[in-house]
Length: 196
Ligand code: AMP
Image (tube, rainbow, N blue to C red; front, top):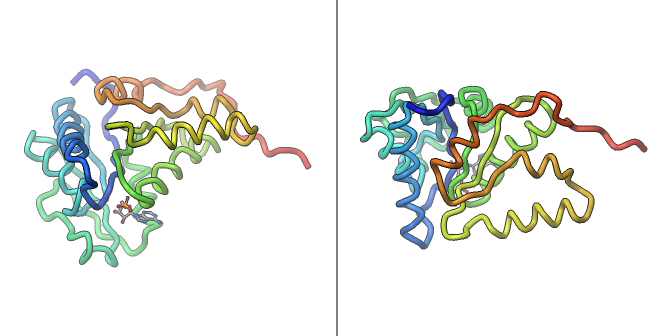
């Protein structure tokens, strides 16, 4: 238990993707969180990488909290073996609980759902709605195109460098976890509405 984080929300695909490395990464993430005594918070389903990360954390004796909207219960098949399962009404409720229950956020490879969820948390840090870090586990260069887009946004003047730097991309999960535990600078620049 070397990490100050108590709980981490993992966003990841409801599919497995085409490279077996993604599933291996999901196993590593679930197991590492459990081994470090960090609660896994996730979307509550059994499908795709979501199910893999939960099963790996449970197999290693970890605490796992799932949050699933009623409407997705059938498609994503709520996991019945979790430490806690919250079946909620709406996607908004799901995301609010997943934000509140964690000290930090990690994205594994995934689709638009994954991207939307981690991007929302990143922007909430930017806006000063919370002071929690996010990281992209960049297995096989999966998130490289996004990292490049982020740099392009900075270069073109739409994203502040300090907001880009709130988030890390990396392929070493224990190192990413260590980075997520570092408190944010209390003097950091939060969102300044541009003047008209
Ligand atoms: P995906 O990355 O598209 O496989 O989706 C991963 C997870 O994100 C799934 O559990 C979806 O239920 C969830 N998801 C999909 N669309 C959204 C959305 N618009 N907002 C929040 N979560 C979503």
